[in-house]
Amino acid sequence: MQGGLIVQKYGGSSVANIERIQKVAERIVNYKKKGFSLVVVVSAMADTTDELIEMADKINPEAPEREMDMLLSTGEQISVSLLAMAVHKLGVEAISFTGGQVGIITDGNYTKARIVKIQAEKIREELKKGRVVIVAGFQGITIAHDITTLGRGGSDLTAVALAKELAANECEIYTDVEGIYTTDPRIEPKAQKIKMITFDEMLEMASLGAQVMQPRSIEVAKKFNVPIHVRSSFSQNPGTMIVKEAVKMEGAVITGVTLNKNEAKITICDVPDRPGAAAHIFKELSEGGVNVDMIVQNVSHTRKTDLSFTIPKADVSKTIKITKKTAKEIGAGEVLQDEDIARIAVVGVGMKSHPGVAADMFETLAENKINIEMISTSDISISCIIKKKFVETAVKELHEKFKLAK
Image 1 (cartoon, helix red, strand yellow):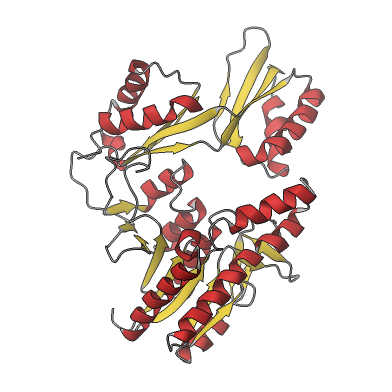
Image 2: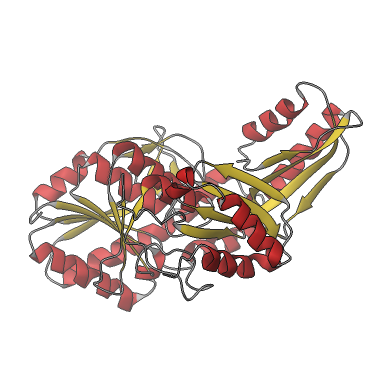
């Protein structure tokens, strides 16, 4: 692969301060000296995005989403220009661009825009000149030239999309951990690094709470078969390869345990048990841009039923507004919210051919007196909603139960 093209992405923790930016520049220059062409995608410096959101909230808690994108896209511009300066200082030519400048065209869905196409001629021209091309992650531009952002973790998506568009030899995602682990090592110190994981398993883990990769970036990688190498910017060790098919031992049923504390449960009480009631509720939520996940409807004995569903915590106020209006329209009762919940899930392609995983999971939670409020399953995962205070115990016990420390 000597002399090939590599797309690298550096997360916020990798460029958190001047010293770390200089370290990233050294790594880039070392690759360049080995003959590689490089396109580097960079996130905003650690905490910058959160600080910008905080400022916006103080000025206007209901700021227009277009203005939020205008604001949040500035974080990456700081990172790319500083990194380009650092690479220059080491004697290698580099040039920084915003997402819009390199032709990342998106739809107009502010704060969670989708990439429509990439017009990458500018990147190709700069690579031909031998420069390192440094691109602001997490952002694009509409046909009308409005700046958009791709949702939290969107720099992963920028990197994978560019790797596909440029037919890169490899897409490396640099973070502050050494790869994908069987669970969050901050909660369970016995967590093991996974050497190889399938797109399907990674997508499931990312969607269910593993915060190492953005789920949408894995969807794109899977669709176009772009292998990803997740590794640490603080070491030279190999990390985790995310690929189409991973070689597994027969005994490996579960690959990992995930948790997510950023969800809320909404319950609409006394929903009339008649055709169309649920359709009306979820149509309104969809049009309001709310991403609904688990849904549970109780069996009706009274011609009325309670309907519960989970959503991202960030969408609570928007969801309450929509559901209260909708509940009134269909003659339902009050709307309740519960933010004191968390999701725990076990993921693994081995579940398809091994019965009893659900029983083992439920039994483990029961032995630890942890009540399950909602359950959701797929071919390769089982998720439970539990009270937030039990989540760390649940992670450790399930990690132990499925022998993931070995």
